[in-house]
Length: 196
Image (tube, rainbow, N blue to C red; front, top):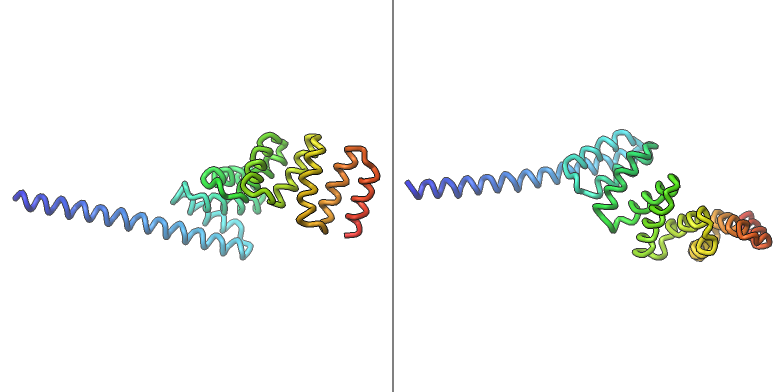
C-alpha cells in the first residue's frame, strides 16, 4: 500500500510539472503570436488592431519589455501620449538597454518641459551610446531651452559631424548662435541651411 501511495505521489507531481511546463510554453507562444499579429497590423496601418494585440501580449507576460515597447510605439502612433509614455516607461525600466524606449521617454519629458528628467534619460543614453544622433539633437535642444548655450552648441556640433548635410541641424545651430548674439555665425548657419 505504501509503494502505491509513493508511485501515485510521484506520478501526480510529474503530471503537475508537465502541466506547468506546457502552460508556460503555451503562454509564451500566445504572447509571441499576439506580438506577431500586432507587428503585422502596424505594417498594414491598422494601429487600433495592433494596440489590442500588444495589450493582449502584455496581459500574458506583464514583465516582457518588448510587448510594452511595441504597445507604447503603437499608442504614440495613435496619438495617445499618456498611454505611450506609461508603456515606454515600463519598457525602459524592464530593459535598461532599450535605447529607443529611453529616447522616446526623454522626448516626452522634453515636450512636457520636465527638463531634469529629460536630461537624466539623455545622459543614460549617451553614456551607453555616445554617438546616438537623435539623443545628441535632443540634448542640444534641451540645452538651448535651458540656456546652456555652450553645451547646446557642443551637442549640435557632434550631431553635425555625423550628418553635415542636415538643414535642421544648421537651423538649430543658428538659433544657438542667435542666443549667443553671434549674428555673423547665425547668418552663416542659416545660409548653409538654405543651401542644403
